[in-house]
Length: 308
Image (cartoon, rainbow, N blue to C red; front, top):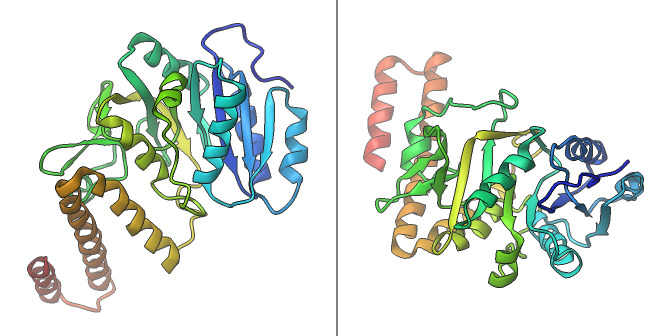
């Protein structure tokens, strides 16, 4: 099978980190092969415990395989990016795709067209929809999730450290960081010499946000709500343990602290917002199960507000 057989320009390189998910790698390679603008090269960086994925990708032309000694999405992305910069520098754009991502058939073509139309844009992404397939997920009415903490969805942080989520817009929107499946000008990455946080392990939470946020102070990052992708295992396969929670807090802090004093304020809102929402949900569950009365619920909410 062949990827990259189209004569269309521009040339796109794809970086695909993976670990112990051979079925998902097969699916995403098929997904890339179905693109209206096929990538010229796909770099699969594998940190699996077996050779299954390495043997699997041999059937694909234009797919290069690199074995990673570390189980770290950030480290693996760096390996793939270095391979492209050193051996495929003739490519115009580079796209980062995870093994649990499924993109619409025109995704790469649509992203590249945005970069081609506007030279001031250096990075672009579509929007993730984990619930409804390849369509816009507008179910973001939770005010705490949107405003009281810095949302993990792409957005624009204003001077009061309030995130304006991209999904509130129907047009191409400038944002402060990109997450998920993004595309970048390879020429810019060569000049800036930015890399993913190499000390981030496992799923490397927020590594894509931190990587992209470094560019937002002097270059334009945008999200197009009309371009969508599906994140299949966003929550299902992420461990719910203390280490995971600690990574979440520390990596989020590293992201928001890049905005100096406003970043520290944002981090405070971030943690308080999460704690408040979690406590409120616990109270509501207790009310539903009859553990507390309506009066007890009201008293509990008042105490929560006072604690903030």
